[in-house]
Image (tube, rainbow, N blue to C red):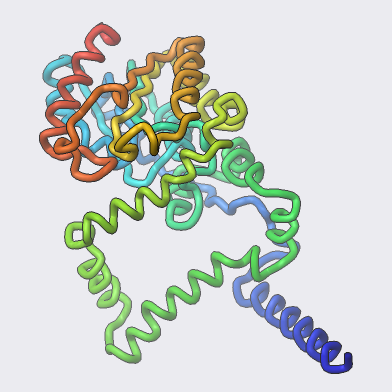
Length: 339
């Protein structure tokens, strides 16, 4: 019994000491603020582009968009000025911020906003907002973006998680700790062992991990694993998710600023047969389609079109043959909408 008491006393003392060290070393306030800490300045990434180029069609999506669409062909065949914002790794939260803090803030607004997505991305507010994606969110958000903070961060935490964020430095300060460890592994060890400073190490890592030399199978498997959240039962409950998402706000912002919103569901190869396809997905898409129609939003579902497997570079991205095919089909689908 005495040994257990001594062990618990020592453990509590060490945890307390290390907690104080984390708070002081990383200059963390206590209790810790559970809100994400955004910088005051919003990067006007697309505002100047809109004012200078004055596009009539604004295409917005992740890396799938760049692989699927030739904007010059669309512009030529539709006789419209087109701007394509294909931002790898982005999802609905970042798209909402781009519309709210960049596009609406511009003097020129596009006639049509075309958002390219896959499956349940539009109603999952916390998808791709933490980790390495946080920096991009921070560029486009400010501390005044309370809706983003609530829906993408606070609402996703249980009462226990909120308590841990506020009162347990090992958890609340985990990103500071991770960044510190990562910095020492990358640069301190590299400098002492390899005589390679920070510039040298950054260059070396860029060469080693450049996407073009990584195994395509590994990349595809990593993407598939990250996308599993999109097909869980609760996420595919459209009626439960839509009110918590950024989709209603995206629709409202576009309508209030006379921008016609078009939603395009991109084709993917994730499900090779019906047995692997979640039964709830079709119901989700049907309800999404009805919701968009009721809100005067045009919905183009290209996942219903049969595109051969050899038109894909991987389960998500089209290859050059696929780009040619999809671009032409999109042009035909947009003609009656914009004319």
